[in-house]
Image (cartoon, rainbow, N blue to C red; front, side, top):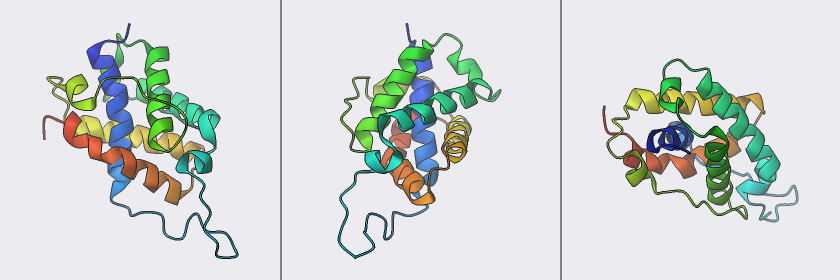
Length: 158
């Protein structure tokens, strides 16, 4: 069973990474064919679909597990369930066919006393996972920009 704190930490990590990259700008020129015609591929498709998202989430969770700054928050977390929620959340946010069924971020993280430093550590772990799979900067920035607005619902401490 995923505890309130375990799920929150995983979701927090995803959100943190996205928030950290949200200020790097959007995709400029991405999604255009060489002929100048607009290409309508979703971010989900450009990332490689669910298999690629799953691989990044697996690496992200492994990074968090190895991160002494924050791994204690996941001690009682149902990791397979957490991974499933994260995959669905990223899949849905990027225009994929998934539907995130987890709780909203504000309710999930309420009272957890998550600090900006905790959030930053999770973002670093997510960015490292994206970098391991050579996710292009434009897609990384776009993904983080989609998730970044959740920070305000997660962080309670400076």
